Structures are given as C-alpha cells and as structure tokens.
Length: 538
Ligand code: C2O
Image 1 (tube, rainbow, N blue to C red):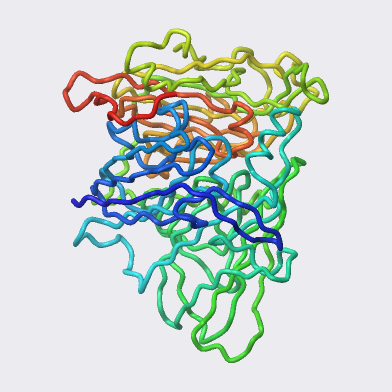
Image 2 (cartoon, helix red, strand yellow; image 1 turned 135 degrees about the vertical axis):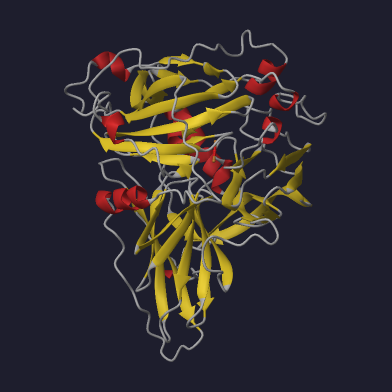
C-alpha cells in the first residue's frame, strides 16, 4: 500500500453561471473540487488549510474510517471545525474499499460548492470483476444557487420558512445550454465507436434525488456506493445525494452527438428545483451537427426510481462475498419525517422541523467524539436516543389520521449506544406527518446491507419473511421511499461516534439526524486511538 498526499487549500473563487457571478468557497479554486486517487488499502493524507472566513470541515463520504473516527469530518460530531486561518490533517486508510465515493464539506451548506470525487482503484494486479474498460470518466452532479448558499440556509433558519430552491443543476460543474442563459456551456464526454467506458457517477447535489440518462445508450451498473453489484443494464440511473454508481457505457453507435441529462425526482407535492442539466456524449466521427435527444423521466417517476433501487444486488461472489448479519442484537425502528414546531421569532409563529422518533437533533457546540473520548459527555449529549418512536402512529394516512401530537417533537442531543461488534437492524419508516417524501439516509463509519423495502406501514410479522439475506446491496446511503420503509443491517465494528442523517441537506438542517456511539472493544486493535494533536478546538 502507498501513502497519497493531497493539499486542500480552502479559498474563495469567483464563478459565473446562469449569466451571474458570485464568489464561492472552493478547494484549490476548483468546482467540483480535486479528485482523490488511491488504491485499496492506501493511506490518504490530506493537508487542509482554511483561507476563507467560514468554519470548514471535510467528510470522506463512504470511507469507513476504521479506527480513524477523528478524520471523519462532520462538524460537532467528530471534530470542531477548522477555523479561518486554521489547518488540519485528515489521515485515513482505505481498508478493504475500492470504487467511487465523494468527499464534501460537512458544515452548514458549504458542500454545495465544496465537494469532489474519490476514486479508489483495486489493489495493483487485482482485476475488476467486469470487463476492463478502455478508460474511465468521472461525472459529478451538482446543484447551483445564484445567491450565496450560506445565506439561503441562514434566512430559512431565521424565518422558519423553507429555504429557496436552487436555480440549476450541474454536470461536472456546468449547467448546459438549456439552463436559461445563452452563455452556458455543457460538459462533453468524448468517445470512440466500439469502446467501453467506466463512468464513475456521483450525486453531489444538496437537496435533490436525480435521474441520469444518455440518449439512445444503455448503462450497465457494476457498482453502487463503492461496493460491487451484479451487473444490470438500465436506460436511467437514479441516485440520491451522497450516492455513487459505476456503470459501463458502450459506445455502440457509429457516430453522433447525444444528449446527457440529469433531472430531479419528486413524487409528492413538495416543491423542488425541476431544472434539467444537460451535457453531451460526442463520438469522434461526427458528421452532422444534429443533437440526438431523449425524454427525461417525468419528475414523479416513482416506478423508475424504485425499479433502479430494486435491481441493485451485491455481487456476492467467492472473491467478494456478502456477509449480512443474521443474528440481530439491536432491533431498532426509526420513524423519520418532517413536522412543525412553534417558534415565537419566526414569521408564521411556526417553523418546519424534521425528526427521528420524535427527536429533533440539536447540534452541540463541542464535538461529540471528543466529549465521549475524554468522558466529558455531561452537558453535551445523553445516550438515551429512543430505539422506537415515542408515540406510535399510522405512517400512511396523511395528516387526517395523524394525531396532532406527532407534529411536535422534542429537541435533544441524544446518541444511541452500541457495544463493539453489536449487530443492528433499523427499520427506517417514512412518516406522512406534513408531507410524505423520499429520504436518502446516510450512515457514517460503516456500510449497511439493504435487506428490505416496502410501501405503507412496515408489517413486523409479514415483512421480515421477505427480507433478502443472500445478496442485499451494500451501501452507505439508501432511499426510504415516500410513505414507505427501508430495512438495513450493519455491524458496529468501528469504535467512535457516527452520524446518521437524511442526506437532503435541508432535512439535516431541520433535525433529521442522530448519532450512534460505538464503544471500544477489548482487543488492542478494537479501540479508538487518541485524537491527533492538531485536532481543532471549538
Ligand atoms: Cu455525505 Cu454526513 O454526509
């Protein structure tokens, strides 16, 4: 294994999109930011220097951070932020991981502009479990606001009203020419007839689950969230924020210029930025200027989204076995959703909030991991996060059948404690309290297996009989369907404090988040080492 050194200089940079210019926070002046390249088992060292006036942290989304919890990055969960002028060295090893992931800022909404790809190649000499591609291309989806993104969330927090929607989506930082500004260029992917391309596709958008399509081309998905899958071929890819996929594109046309699109998914009445971003797949032999188009999926294409997620199965081969925990130590039920709390300073006297099991998580002012490690949890957090909802209710009936008490939640900074190596199952049930909505939920520190999924209320008697315990997909982020549920399993084999939250940043901001505290094991390599000496202070 090698050591890979990177320098991340956080700096402001003026960017022009949609015919307007604004300064944005970037890494090394780039949007999207620099790609990290490494191989499985490599050690990655990123030297971060903060040259902006915001507090910053970086999260390596999907990197397991085995016993390197100090480098995980979510602000006030594993570390205090790096203050203006400050530095911090992120140091972690990609133990047993290969594939495509992303890194992003993990404080406030900075990840709107501070994100990039992580490419982890297999160990030298180890082939992919699929035909070797001619070459690889990275495709990053993003979301763009004309105004200052930090102001968007700040205004929303003060007013109690939902934040402004974004103004465009981007593919590799570009909106494409359909975005309503005639100077907008689109990303171009150049291909040659007969060759295979491995697309490393990342949804780094802030609040939108997105469909991806290339006109008249199919994609063969071979990996999701940096875990190999059984190959399956599809016309449309579907990724929630934080999710990644590797797909093989075969350039099987003799010539031409084909449209590539990303467009949002929203199957309820919740407002969403419905702008389509466009890019181009361009063959070397191009004889005509004409562009070959295809229809984007309708915004409420629930079946396309569901079919894509349902088709994902882990590879489960001899070299890459699927080890789903069969015996469960902690069987949890998380009811997640959006609600309303009273707010005397807000415009309507109320504010939108979100919760897990009636708890709206409140960010502490010091990092949970430090408080835990130094036995100073008092006044910072409690370990009584409820494993089930405080008041059971019907999750499917909409507002009318929902007792009003469920609209209101308790504020708290509570964690759920797990002993080292405990096995955990969580039924994540979407509630319908204000608006049923799909939630891409993300766990830090471990991957999980998606053993089941369904619509309506989870049925504890019948549904577990249908769980897939053979080849469930292994992921770090999974969509909980609108007014439905998803069942996941994982092993708590990584001591530390691990964030669990909806990866729609607006829902995280509203409180749809909590943390697991995984205790040390007895063995010497089962403990969280002491913090690095440069760990920032709050
Ligand atoms: Cu990609 Cu906690 O985030």
